[in-house]
Image 1 (cartoon, helix red, strand yellow):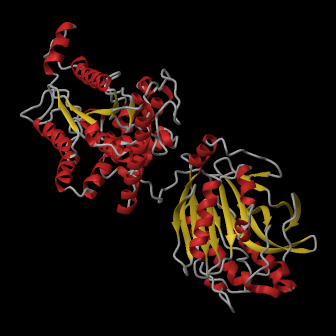
Image 2 (image 1 turned 90 degrees about the vertical axis):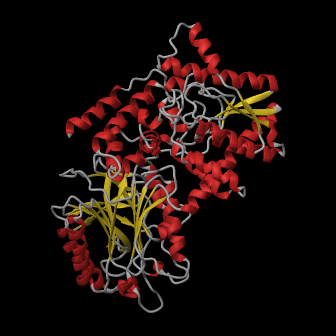
Length: 637
């Protein structure tokens, strides 16, 4: 729970219409089951104490009194349990009957939320029996206690905050949950009795997803089960738990029981702080404070995406690759058109990043209806270049009919090293960066001589780690890959290969896809790549995970580490994850100065490190707090 994961449940059971005693037994059973599972928020259906379809029986004092008696039994079952429970019950106040969500905790009623919008159309006629919630909040007497009553109640224990609405409230143009969320509720519970008709399941699902996205909240929806099915209506017990537009879990129709997962309230709080359109408003909101007696580590059961930048399904992955290519190409085409560039100049190494940049240039030329010969592809072999990558670079350029230039920079770099008094047999950072800067100089000078522009090839993951030579491959006139993470670069190149009608192009792109990531700045060994990037800075699978959850979602290092163990622990042991997490944060803070002066480049996703995009960070910020927390991980072990 300290990480923000609150275990939540939506419950449904076999209601017996008008049999309050039976229904109370079932509610108590679900409460006990949820408590054993460590649930902290349990939401049960609308009018589940009596059944929703009692119709004019709601006028009968016998049913109303039976409901109150059953509610007392349910209330007693919550004693000693650190679990907020919301159950539906009809209650009479001020001489009128209300369709209520009763919020209970440790044997006490914290508050009662009456339904605001009562449907009175099609198969619904709730206004016949019930009264709509009055405006504002007040106090009512129940079981000898005075409790808050109204729509604007937010229940807050410090770890999470909860608000409730009922069924049709969500279908209305201005759902009460909007005010509740603006008043601070991070989790919304919807107690519903929604019957099934063709297409309604899908519509209901979209409503829940959309509302959780709009309100940046967790949304727990539960509907009456098939025990309610009577006369002309059928009910299915549909249960949905959503978080910020993503369905975390969903029940099958016509089932009963608990649907359980964890809502990440710290993530939601971060998103609200980050989103300036989310304006908090305390108007007509009453906070009801309660305290948990025990706080434990929540056992995770929810899905955490180990590759957050890469969609799981093949169709979604292909669509994302196509969309990103289109964005990259249209952004570049605009810059070429605006600058009246006669050509684009791109350095080709035979690696993934430069290959993707070249493909983007090809797509941009198609948009502009210009020949690929306007792309000057330059390969610049030097000390670490292998025959394999050089061959792949030349092949792909020739197949695409670009203008290929091969410029061996070995002698130039040797002369430069001699000029600065550096031993060419000392393979240090000077030795490496001299090559990278020479390549950039060559590209820039060709662009000047041809009235063109240099296209950058570096990707988002490299920028996060600062894995770029300052004023070397770090610099260009337009960076097409700067918001594409390394794990996705691979898939875009593979997607292009799979969808190319040119079998020869597909073959060479596949060869590039299978080549280890390397800057090739150190001499080859026996003709093979001797310098593999992931051996030096760590696996990009881990770093992209750290980048997404640590930077995009704002998770603290301990939480990032815990989630990495949870979903990547089969691939990496604890010590390995810890090692590269520390490397990530050290490099991320130390290398910000490179990101502070990036060239323009298209933003394609929710994560970008451009100083003009959505990441602004001082170049000299201290990493101490983050590194201290990382050190605590091993101490806690």
